[in-house]
Image (cartoon, rainbow, N blue to C red; front, side, top):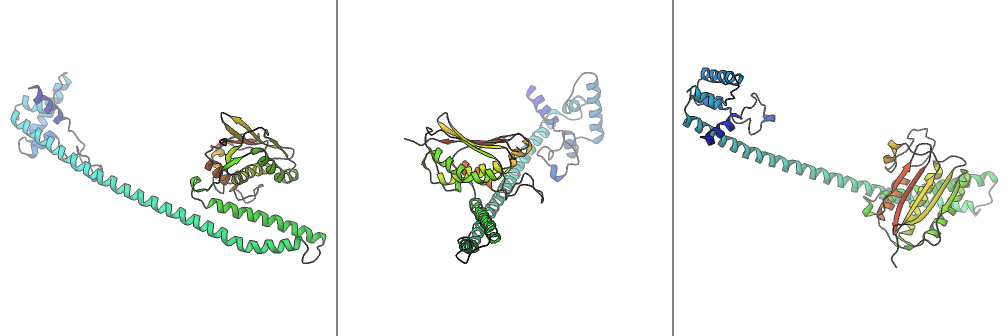
Length: 356
C-alpha cells in the first residue's frame, strides 16, 4: 500500500504551468496534470475534479494534507486500479518526453559547438590575414625608405655638395624622422606574429651588464635632452642569463624610452638587476607621471595611448610596450607593473639563469 501511495505522490507533483509556449517547453510541461489526464480519458468529470480539489483544500486547512489522488479515492470518484494505471501512463509519458528533450538538447549543443568552431576558424583566418597584411606592408614600406635613407646619407656626408647651417639642421631632422619610421616598421613586423609562441627566439648565455651598459649608452642622449637622469644598477658579478640578447635589448630599450618619455624634467630612470631565487629579476623604474590603477591593464594593448586625444602631449604609435611584453613573455617571464598616478612606475620580470 505504501508503494502505491508513493506513486500517487509522485504523480501529484506533476502540477505544471498551463499556456506554456514552445520556447519554454520542458519534459514536465508536456505531461498533463493528473486531474486533467483523468478528465481527458473520461474517467472523471470537471465537476468531480472541482469537488476533489475543494475537498483537498478543506482537508488541508484542517491540518490533513491530501494528495489529489487520495482525495479522489476518498470521495470514491475513481478506484485504485484506474488511478494506478493513469499514474503509470503519466510516468511513461514523462520518460518519453525526457528522452526527446535530451535528444533535442544534444542537437542544440552540437549546433552551437559547430557555430563556435566556425566562428573560431573565421577569427583565426582574420588574424592570419591581419598578420600577412602587416608583414607585407612593412616590407613594402622598406623599399621607399631605403631610397630615402640612401639620399639622406649622401646629403649628410656632403657627397652632393657642402651644406649650409640651415640645410644641416634640415638633414638632421630628416635623419631623426627616417630612424623613427624605421623603428615603427620594425614594430609592425614584430606585431605581425600571431602570439608570443610564434615569436622566434635565439636564446644563448648572455651577461647582462654589458647589455644594459649598451642600452644606457644609446639612451643617454635622449635622457639628457629630456633632462632625465638615467641610472643603472647591474652587478658585474651577476650570473649570465639564457635569453635572446638582440630581442631583449630591444624590449628593454622600449621600456627605458617609455620611462624617459613619460617623465618630467629632473626625474630619474633606473635599470636594475639582481639574483632572486635562482633567477635574475630585471626592472625599469622611473619617477614619472605614473598610471592610474584602472588603466594599468590597458597599457600593453596594441596602439593604446594613455592620452588618446588628437592633442596629446606624448607621441608614439602605442606599440612599444605591447611588443616589449610579447618579447618578455616569449622568454617565459611574467611581466609585472607597479604604478601610481603622479608617483612613477616600476616594471619588472625575471629571467632564467644560463646553465653551466
